[in-house]
Length: 250
View 1 (tube, helix red, strand yellow):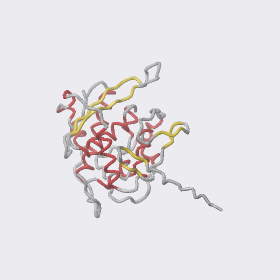
View 2: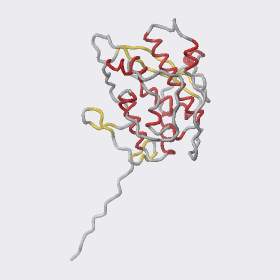
View 3: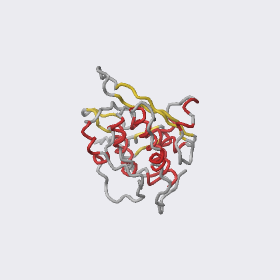
View 4: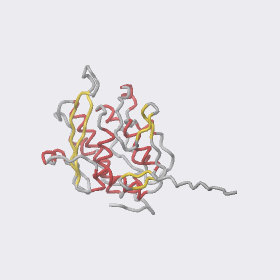
């Protein structure tokens, strides 16, 4: 008897711009419908009851280099899109691939015009030059136009920094100013991105988030008329723990 042997082809790895992402499952955040972890997902506004759950706004933010305990994402007050990306990044098994993914996201960040690259939009304390600004618009689908959401745009001359900016822009766009204020910067640790960054790059990430939070607040208040300069400067951090035994990408 002739026995036919059926050869199974190995399943192809998930590719993002030609980069294999091993173990990166498609995420389900839309009523059970699977969407790509990198595709824009509809933003759902969370309840305003988070007002009483705001994390501390202390200026002495420290990103721990070692992953000690798994962070509870619900305690970080993330937007749905940001939570999806944190989950996706944390599932990538190696640091170099996470690094490549940030570079991919940088390549997909929409271009901006020169009128965005002004001193008022420059993020201080970054190794690269970063500019970011935002608009406040009615939430899409809100017939009463009572809910206002923030949409960011920006650019950087450093590819990795641009990738971090792209992650923040994608994760925060479509959120309300209050939701943005509530986001805990420790999510970069939960995403395991902080492991691959130099202290200077971690510094730049926190400064970008601090500036984006401030711009959202200014937009909601109709401008920066009553800005506390000392408080604004205290939110800019300049030191981080060294990462022993970890590749230090620039």
